[in-house]
Image 1 (cartoon, rainbow, N blue to C red):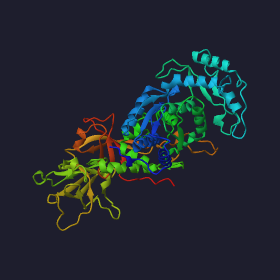
Image 2 (image 1 turned 135 degrees about the vertical axis):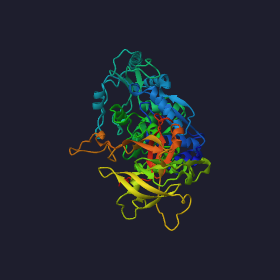
Image 3 (image 1 turned 90 degrees about the vertical axis):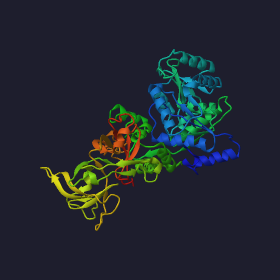
Image 4 (image 1 turned 180 degrees about the vertical axis):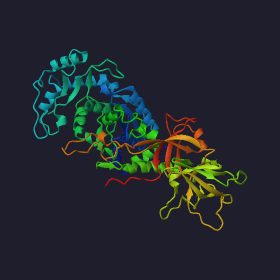
Amino acid sequence: MINKDQFADNHFIRNIIDEDLAAQRAVRIITRFPPEPNGYLHIGHAKSICLNFGLAYIYDGFCNLRFDDTNPEKESDEYVRAIKEDVQWLGFQWHEEHFASDYFETLYQYAIELIQAGKAYVDDLDAEEIRRYRGTLTEAGKNSPYRERSIEENLDLFQRMRSGEFPDGSKTLRLKIDMASGNINLRDPVIYRIRRVHHHRTADDWVIYPMYDYTHAISDALERVTHSLCTLEFEAHRPLYDWVVENISIDNHPHQYEFSRLELLYSITSKRKLNQLVSENHVSGWDDPRMPTISGMRRRGYTPEGLRLFSKRVGISKSENVVDMSVLEGAIREDLENTAPRMMAVLNPIKVELINYDEALTQSRSAPYHPNHPEFGEREVPVSKNLYIEADDFSLDPPAGWQRLTLGGEVRLRYSYVIKCEEAVQDSSGRVVLLKCSIDHDTLGKKPEGRKVKGVIHWLSAKHAVRTTVRLYDRLFTESRPDAVRGADGQYRPFTEFLNPNSMTEINAWVEPVANTLPPESRYQFERLGYFVTDRYDHSAEKPIFNRTVTLRDTWLPEK
């Protein structure tokens, strides 16, 4: 259940909206989330989704989902489906669904209108020539030799561009603004190019495609968006956005506002680079649990509530938004602490034999699935002659302050009896392979007489435990900014050099019998170990597979 206090508050965009409503510059707030369907959404998109949909919730307005599908080489229906699923999984539902391609004919007619007004022209310069004519940050550009074509000639050429008479890249349609502008984006920007590429929705109907800046502004205006929210790299594009809507015959003039982009340390949020990880098989796919994609984080066991909490905590501002991975993991951990039922699991087992086990003197005990949620119910914790405990919970040579099992020492089995280690059996290499322990049958639910037992460890009955596969995930990169590391020559080094070779380890482990009843995407806390989830695709009740979502506490030092 989403409520209004789940979203970032007291930020500058909310202040702007409050002022616009008070001054009646807006009656109903309309936002939009406009991804390009050229990849899967990532954690940066999650922040934008929470902002745009959150504002619609807060102000009882609308948020549209619009696919910016003007670059057909890289776009597909697969990405459209994934984006829609991710938005809904995060807990949101759009008011209207649109595609930029819905407006191709309208965009074309507005281009005709701009040509007729003498504000656009067909240019024969190629891409390299356009770059040379554009000038630099310190030098003005110069006019194209084709800039003064007549309106009639431009109309004829543009219509022939649409009909497919000219080769790809041979002509463009450019706005006629100012080649001496201090803002390079206003130096006669290209708004149409020729490109014979099959489009995922319009097929081969079009051979000319509009550019993003032109399309985005008009799409916002057509949908009557009141507050168009972009990340800061689009700040220099805002004058062009305004110029487009002010120079066509449309009655709605939306405004663009920019906020800082999220940079998550030990990760990357470039779809191009994420696609490289997939295409070069560094990961298993866009939904690999190590990926910062929404689908990857979902498969990892992250929760929608945890991601919304993270988005609220990182906030909305214009200042640099560099966030350590521990902030994300902390938000997920906080949500799971309250919502994930418990079970016991042994990841690195050592066998325990109870040498004085007497079935007639032992009994199972029930344990709650969650200490603070009795409504989650309870499960039986059975005992048998042979147990599994974590190898890390035993030491032949314990350090000072050790409160787990050692030779001659006692511990309590969680929810069960006190045991004492009488003998440690070692193999030829000196590795402990079996612990022979005695059980105190008089300690179920009560303290032993005459002695104090401090340590409590988790364990499983070998007779009842379920064998499972556990995937232990860690951070994908060893560098906090893997795509910003320079070599001795000053050049950026390939970010793939910093992939963590230990980012995923697959082990066999033992878990409670409930694992054989769980559907995919069941989140549990393995007591004392961390939070885990049954894999979204590979898990079955017959062959359970768990992914580690996050450890119980942060084991990484934050970036300084």
